[in-house]
Length: 131
Image (cartoon, rainbow, N blue to C red; front, side, top):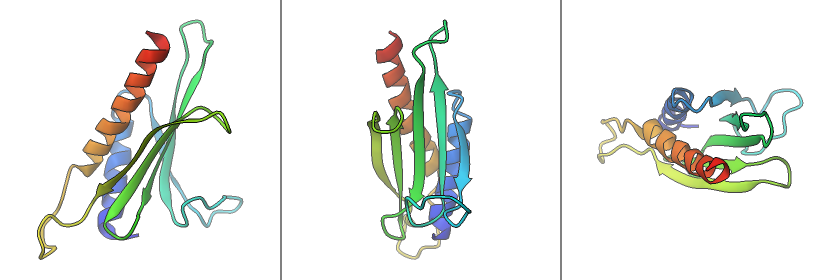
């Protein structure tokens, strides 16, 4: 994982936790004991859970933010549901490369854009489910 990828992933996870959707993000160590290696390297994973006021009709949103493809992008995936009953909501790749050819400058706010895309997908889904 490259430094720009790591920074964007951490920025995105922080923005998602601050989004007001009760999203909990944590690092996934692919070398950890018992972990199944989905992306081939470390990444951030998390979830958000919602239920109706009576506690029924629970919904789960799974979020993964991983480095790649390549050294200058990160991948974001959001699914709703569990097991074989999942519905993909977001599958996007974000460019984290330097905005100028020298590589000397910093491309910030990628994490904020990721949080915006993920948050909007969850809010839209919740509007359809609850509204």
